[in-house]
Length: 296
Image (cartoon, rainbow, N blue to C red; front, top):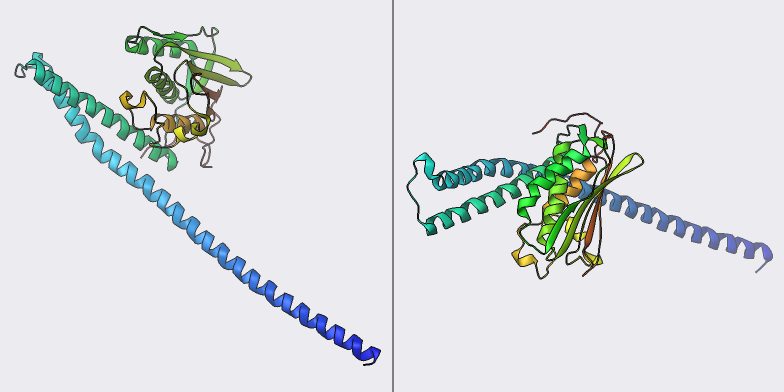
């Protein structure tokens, strides 16, 4: 074979290899495009599922609130003998008390579900106003003082600098702190629960620290998921369905801040809430900033 023929054969072989690679690349591109289309379809399905879940939770919660409230009010009416209800014996009053407390627990759960659905749908109202931190903590101190029935547990509030204020939604901030303090009371058998608030530049850091049973590191994020609870020696007697912390974190994000946890078994837990001194107005789902948003 002459040199010319050999070169022609090499060129033909390279052309064939190039054509083969071009064909493989084309097939790969088609596969990538098909995969992308499938992922887009799945993403749309997930978005629709999320919207349907939020709509379902919102509608069901609305429908349940009225009958649950009716049950609670009827139980209270029967317990109030001053309004002319029949006189009840001890066992009847105890059973009605069970009904009332069960109804209150169920109403709290339904309300939390409704709030989570509103947040996911971007329809939760935020009403910022100036809040004096010392006054807020004083209100919480008075609210929880009668609830500390364990003499081995102390609930303490650190002194807050005079005039320390924050512009935020007071109701949502108070609910976050109520959830955190309530959880600390449930899972602290002895020692101290300490609530504090300090300024950090353009933010305010709220902390709820306890000497309770603590939470393993692998469960730190799990407890912020809906309906998730960590099994433990005190869990059986602690009320709740696992919505308080998820709702608290969602509220924290809605207010432009964050809610984090530091904890270890046997070393207690510290929940840290950081909020900007002035609510930025930006919503977590990317909606347009607004001072107030409509509630459905």
